[in-house]
Length: 238
Image 1 (cartoon, rainbow, N blue to C red):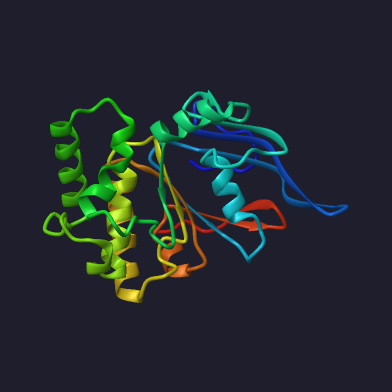
Image 2: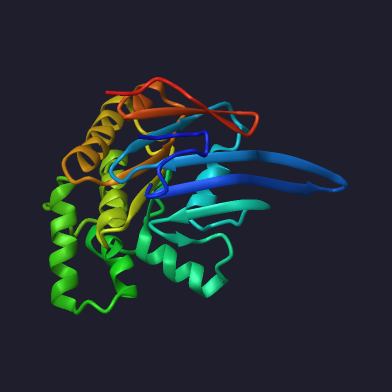
């Protein structure tokens, strides 16, 4: 069960406490997040909504260790990541976080197979094991017949499914999705959301997603709204 009051189960997969994020713009302090609390249990699918500038992507970056808070703490699977150093934080991120971006972030000079394999190059897996993991991930997203294709040879929906395969190939603790349907037509967006929904329902993946799309948000189990840097619980999805 997702909670935003800071009184949730201490065994929650993700625990955020009194999280503040402030940026300095000249002589002015801009408060993006204010005293935010959040508990997310393992296997939950949470969508964050809110107007531009409400702090959605900032929150996602903090949860993924891409940025550090001004105050407060973030604990993921028992690891308090808030004060980790750069190399330790990078190692934690590689092990625990799978990222899915709006613009896919695939390398155009690499095939689908090679793009998905990239996170595994940071592990100790041998070539044969890496290939097995990549083939399983691409089969999961329905692209086992496209492993030798380059991004330019794929549709937008297929590119996003490759990025999802890349995100899950190392079996991360959770997925962070930033507007995963933002650059897709309605049909492709529906296919991507069905895939994310399946990853949560069938494979128990914990997914935290930022979206402006109400149709995407309603596929999540819980919808949270960010308003002026604070979280407000919304209606559950499917």
